[in-house]
Amino acid sequence: MEVVSFGVLGASSFALRHTARALNEAEGVRFAALATSSPAKAAPFQAFAPDLRVHDSYDALLADPMIDAIYAPLPNHLHVEWTRKALEAGKHVLTEKPIALRASEIDSLIELRDRTGLVAAEAYMIVHHPQWQLVRQLIDDGEIGTLRHVDTVFSYDLSADPGNIRNRPETGGGSIPDIGVYTFGSARFAARAEPVALSARIRRENDVDTWTQVTGTMAGPGGEFTYSSITSMRLYDRQEVTFQGETGMIRVVAPFNAGVYREAQVHVVHDDTTRVHHFPDVRQYVLEMEAFARSVREGVPFAWTLEDARGTQAMIELVLANEV
Image 1 (spheres, rainbow, N blue to C red):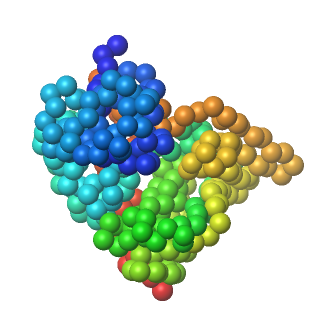
Image 2: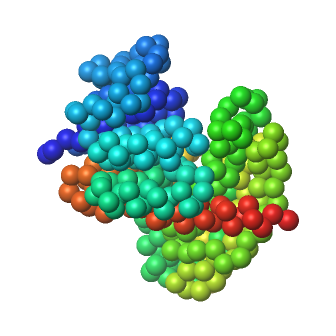
């Protein structure tokens, strides 16, 4: 099997905990290089990837002829710039979510992707998890009848870390950019739906949203349904998505940080029965990296395209435009 060599832009703590390790473990992938000017930050990556090459700048990594693809876990406001630079350097690129802070910025990335023929995508890992593929199939198959309501919640408490990039406006912080991509995007993906009309109540600190409640309607193949979501960086940890139909309900109890928040489970509920699907050992970041490598090697369609990412960003902008 041809191996896809990845380089990672920046020694982020998220990459250290999750995605760089996934690159190191994924089949058909080599975690080959890291860009950081800090030997101290590079050291823990080299501890599990001892053959790792370390470049002292992002540009030096992009110029490395041994690198096929770039993974970019940068602060939100840098995503478009370095996605573009990676493509212009002839590298495939997987960029963390949100890949852009405005839907219109994704248009230029789509044009550049098409012009170069390279693979470019947003690292929206949940769609690679079999629990979400199951949920989508169950809805498609009419397991719960016509879909009538979707409820999504994602919260955690970041109040003790005011310097975190998620708490800073200049780095594209806020609960909506950080986790709204999950509450909005999961409904869009599973129900194959787009928003019709939305309104939002938003609380802010330091010019970033720390709590947002969204209500409204969306529409998919089965028609319109009501939608609600809460995202917050000031509430106790909670993740849950519920799809409510005319004849049953689907509950996803660890929808986003599956296996970290708790075991991934899909509960299919009918009048007097609950069927539980367990996913105890699934590594969604590993699956994501393997899927991206297949797209690079074999042209296999990636499960989350730039067009999909644009749809979620457009939904975010619709929410922000309809604050009450």
